[in-house]
Length: 255
Length: 183
Image (cartoon, rainbow over all chains, first blue to last red; front, side, top):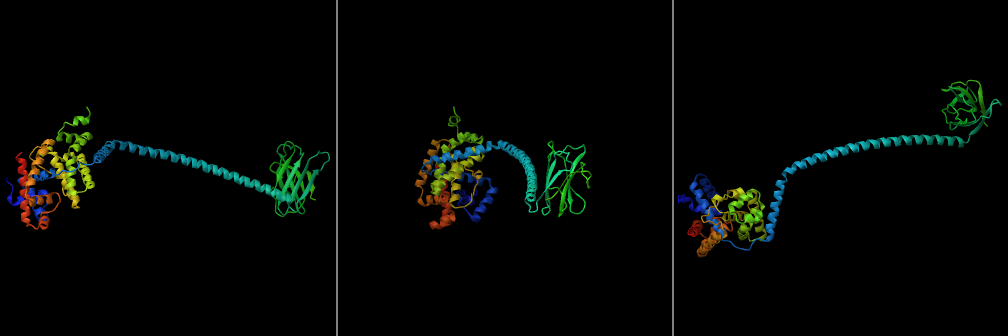
């Protein structure tokens, strides 16, 4: 045995893990330089292993093997699953792509819904406007000063067109209903005139009768607060006139 | 013939090679051969069945993950596993981090213990030597090896001089060596 005798006992302790402190550091430094002491350490570790092998006791529980083999199988699966990581990566991209498609779909749907909402808003606005017109008609008809004006043909030979205008100065509204109106020359239209108690006739709207000679005008734009003496109808160019063009074919006073 | 059946006749080195290839049946064979040794050592040190089972699990998982840490040309698997089990159990007992990686554990045992019969004969001789050994010497060895005490702690507990403890421990290991060399 060529082991250094001064280290012999410390080597035995070191093999058992029973050496500590400065002595341990010293032997470790020596072992780095001494091959024969390293071989002796291996031998002493073997001697100590004999001590370990003498132990006896109960066998490990059966579950211990199951636990070990399950752990090993799990690790093996993880290792063999590595190539699948690429598949998962691909799945990730696929998922992202699907999400993009869905996002585009949702964006389009959102856009469509926005358009629908816009259309509904437009409809609502139109309905509000229609309601406002009806409300104003009702206001005029129910107004305290609502006065019917019977408009009859000026010439008894003209059969039997008639019109009725209901006007409210307070509500600044006018409802005009006509029937049996004769057909118009091309490019011409009937024009209703508000004839005030003072001043020139005021245009109250241009209209054309339907095939049965009927016509209705609801609340045409009129100056506010005008007191009407009568309403009259003339035939004017389609775009209307600012002053009545004779002859006046229909006319009626209030009352 | 199943893989497990083929593995039955293989020696430790071949089984470790198979483990290196990821053969789980070979790992099961090694467990069947040496789990009792590892568990017994861990239980002897820790005196706690659950803790010993954890050490058993840990040691074989390390072998599975790093079968190359065992060098079959430098010794037998049984003493190698016994040593790393003892080291890990003592680390747990002393509540310290692992002092030695299994890759650093080098164990050289002269007699061939490849077969269970060989190992049984060797163990019986060692037990006989321990039985004949003076109680103070056997106690010093066991306190150091199974209880993880340092030589100064043993000296303090036994009220013996430090030099005496050193001498007893080394002499005790030499007696064990001589017992197996005579095989």
